[in-house]
Image 1: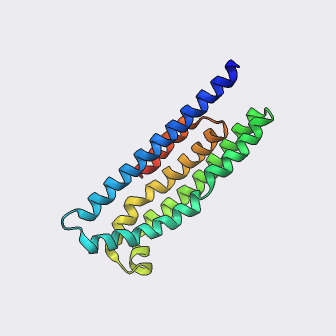
Image 2: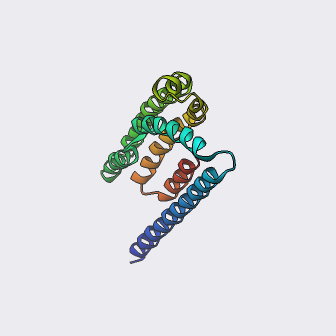
Image 3: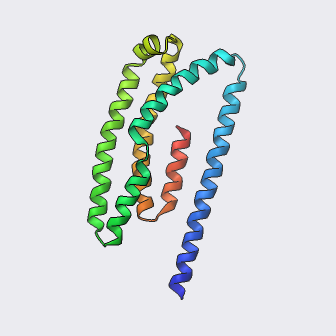
Length: 170
């Protein structure tokens, strides 16, 4: 009886932590968007420059981290369910290295290719600095996705909520 009540309490705490973190992320995103769009001197041209650079960034971010937390969470939880804790940790290490390398490569392509991408593909030379500024977050977001997936698989959602806060910043 006590163990069942403890499970319910733990579940509710995890749900509450995730809800609070999601609300915080949305509020930070709203504040950021409002500031950026209403900043004097930024205007429509600034939004166009930022938006075009952001589309390229979103493409590289998708390559390096789409579906990652869910997949890792599933693999880790399967290992934990059968008591293979070392297998779960091995999945984490392999995913960390693999997606660390993929995201590092994507970040570097975006960082060092920003001039070429902005001038050739986007034909907006001013977008180069947007690409350079956004490039490090590809690596950080991908790594946080791996960490989030691992801890979700271990049913420790407090770490996951903190990882979401980190991603919201970038």
